[in-house]
Amino acid sequence: MSETLSSTPRDDGFRMPAEWEPHQGCWLLWPERPDNWRLGAKPAQQAFVAVATAISEGEPVTVGVSRAQFENARARLPARVRVVELSANDCWMRDVGPTFVTNGRGHLRAIDWTFNAWGGLEGGLYFPWDLDDQVAAKVAELERVPRYRAPFVLEGGAIHTDGAGTLLVTEQCLLNPNRNPGLDKVEIEGLLRAWLGVETVIWLGAGVHLDETDGHIDNLACFVRPGVVALTWEEDPADPQHAISTDALARLQKARDARGQPLEIVRIPQPRPQFISEAESAGIDLSAAAMPRPAGGRLAASYVNFYIGNGIVVMPELDPTRDGEAAAILAKLFPERRILAVPGREILLGGGNIHCITQQQPVGTPG
Ligand code: KQY
Image (tube, rainbow, N blue to C red; front, side):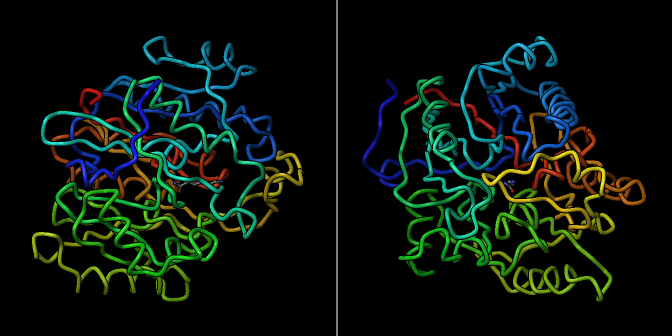
């Protein structure tokens, strides 16, 4: 059994590395539930295959899948992708998987956050979520990595680090009473320092307009290297995203990172507003266990929801009129990596994008 630790990562000299540090692999889960994914999740499965295939160009990829879908997933994914049976309630590995931490001696451990489906019974997105809450522990078992079980709710998509002591988060998500109602901002900052080994927490306000996670940072902004933040941007003042991104920009301009340095902020244009169509909505099963997805609802589309892998960046294609500009900005930000664009619409329809469905495993030996 992988060891369960009772200390915190900081006590033991561990910290969360930046996403651009070398990976020994990447984890995903297989989409299946027909009350979140249209047409029995077949179009989403195709999109996940494209993401897994792209990432596997740079690092080993593992996809966790239910017993019922094992053969199908195995047949559709390339042979170089490892497929393991792993129960889950849906497929958001960023949030239900472990956040890996490393120390200066090349050791790797896993943090297993308490997960409540983005809000539990107060606005959570589905019920139950008990299998999701076990995913991080099962990944730690498979990798024989010692595990910290965090006694508070957090999701991997709610945090971004520069790997050098700075963390980006949003107030909308981390201070939401549906996550940790007994904790105030100062207490939450203390926990983030202890569990992620950071010194400086930069608080942005709201996340992307109508983001169903209560404003995950991974759809709004991320570090691309120490001192540089990519921010999703909307020029049109009539679009609610304009005020959200403007507020985030002002906060980032005032902020200093853990080294005491100001940040450079690079704006990435939002895709034009995206809405779920009648046909797309009609393809999703109605169920009391999951949130409805009626036609006409605006989707929280953002190019910032990309994955940084070994030698590559995998970004979603979301709007043919803006995909090229977003790809060009990413190419400038990551001159040493290839930018791979894959269709993002089907993942977006489920409420997230490429960053949300992936979880990197940094290089390190269990220890
Ligand atoms: O933003 C993420 N990290 C996850 C999105 C989850 C959406 C659930 N329907």
